[in-house]
Structure formats: C-alpha cells, structure tokens
Image (cartoon, rainbow, N blue to C red; front, side, top):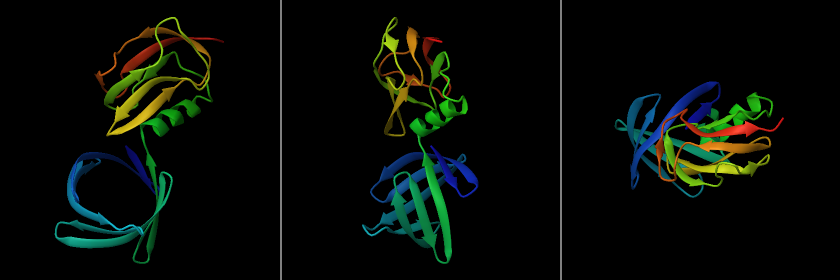
Length: 167
C-alpha cells in the first residue's frame, strides 16, 4: 500500500505479524518492529532497541501521529483508493481494460463476457495485503473478455478484464 506522510510518499508492505512483532518493508527496506497500541491511541514502538512513543488519532484512512512536539498527517492509500485515483485522473472516462492496481489475488468475478456494466458496478473483488477492494467501472460498458479466474494470483498492472466502452 502507499502511505503519504506529509509530502513524503512511501510504499509499505506488511510481510508478517505475530502478536506484537511486525515485519514490513518501507520502500524496499525491511524493518522488524515490536508494536503495542493501547485503546486510547497511545502507541509504543521498539526498533533496534530504541523505544518510540506516540499518539495516533484515526479518522477513516487518515491519521494524525503526534510524537513529542512533532505532528504528522498520514494517509493510507490502499488498492481501492489507488485504483479510484487513477480513474479520477482520466476525468471519469472508463478505460477499455481493468488492470490490477498492485500484486494480489482475484477473490470474485461478478461479470462474464457479454454482460453489460453500468457506472459504479463492481467487476472484480480483488485482495492485496489481506484487504479486499472492489474494482468498479466509471462508465457504461460491455465486458468483452475476462482474462483471469477466481483464485488467480496477479501482478501489478496485469490486465484482468477487457471492455467495450459505450460512448
């Protein structure tokens, strides 16, 4: 997933989590941390023998992280948000291909070739990093070809469905 911390953009992948021990990569570098989060949003993180305490205030997928006298705005951009942002860049124009926004797995395919889809219909339920996202169309179209099957693992940018766009 993509994480925005102020002006910085980082690509973060959760590799494993067992109890409080978390292994993740940030921009390709692996980190092993011990994290404890209390119900009141206070977080204690231990990395390389150093302890870092902070307060985390959540608002949906946006967070305010306070550490000492510093405060950071953090946004988490998951697969669905990344997909929707790419669609908004095209001013709502539907492309003729639905592609995987990141490596993941096809959970469910809701349409077959020849089916009509309308603006907002979910074509595919996609899972990445243990989170499911709905890949939707942003315009009316007809499903021309389904290139994957339920349960398939897919690469980032892999074509999933080809569409005929209704003008």
